[in-house]
Length: 122
Length: 369
Figure 1 (tube, chains in turn green, blue):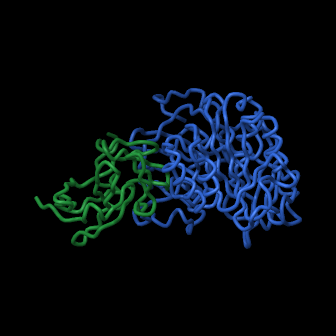
Figure 2 (figure 1 turned 180 degrees about the vertical axis):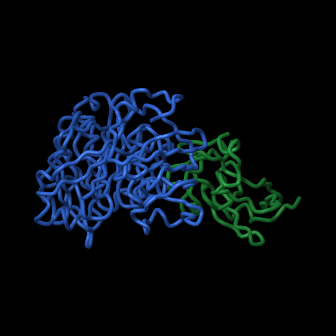
Figure 3 (figure 1 turned 180 degrees about the horizontal axis):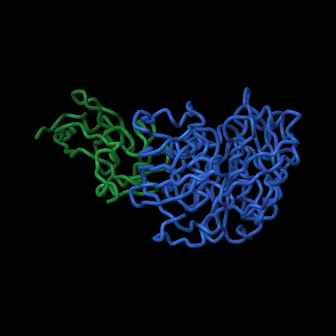
């Protein structure tokens, strides 16, 4: 278990996102107004860098590339999204934002290779 | 042929056999295993789509990368190796774009998406041929042209077709400007770009005699009057094409009797505006429920309305900025349509989602970049 310092709460304005380097791991920190999320900086669809391509509004993160969207409170998929967002657990302590980072989360854009047929079709 | 589990017995019957010789393609997706035939002269994307296999795609012409697939068994031929959409492919693993690949043997493919088979609400695309009909210069660099088809095509307002000139590499995607059932003539608009092979050919003298290949209809940024929604449309340059089709469909279906629409059309200068007669006619027929604004990015308008088309409003600045200013506080929960250059599209999406509070599922846009 390792909580890592991301930034101060005031460093990421409401409805914005920015990438923070945490000991070599790029983490996208998103302030959706009612809270924060920390996640890999790429869209799980086609690896679009979310720092540029995302819009945060009404607690929803939308990637403008193909309008995949996720509710940031519930992490439910919306719009055209077909894959869930992966996130690091986040907590606030004395105005500091921390994320539980055991290892870098990545999306496996070739996941079909590693799966046997049963898993691929599930 | 579709597997017996597909709920689309009519789909396989309606599909044309395609050019010979026919290869068999087995497609494995996250949610299905489907078989379809692929002719020698068509891409894998065309083969699947015309037989009702709902393959992922957006541009169908090599730029967006949405139709990525992996060849598990068999051989393909790739038409455009340097397609922008192929930049991120793992070629060493056998990854291809379905819109750029033709079958050279029977194939087994995997697609990293959920692929269904069955009737979609849009008509299945087919191969047709056509010849250029009327050509008309609308501005110094914008051309309206007609394609007279070998067989009529029904399509949804907002859809596009891929046109290929024999001898010129690659197909070009253009949205239909007109709307009608069983259309024998399709209307398109193209902006001339320096060094554009198709543009040079179209703007040149010799295009009247040649027979073109046409594949369509394609695209999901469609309008159905039955949805009964207010509309917000933002277009830059030739991105107006699909919006013209949507307005034609909406006007003919009396959509504006009960619903509002606002169209923002971005060009550089007043002299760059086109289709203004048609737009003005739509405004007149809509009885106050349709507003059309021409936004000029490189010129300050001298008046609030167009000097020759008084029903068309004028605004200064980028089209999405003009939209943001005009729409403040009166979005009315619309269905939104966006088409144009990538930066304009991005700007319009940001305004719609943040200021208009429009959900991604209510925004229709086919990505061509």
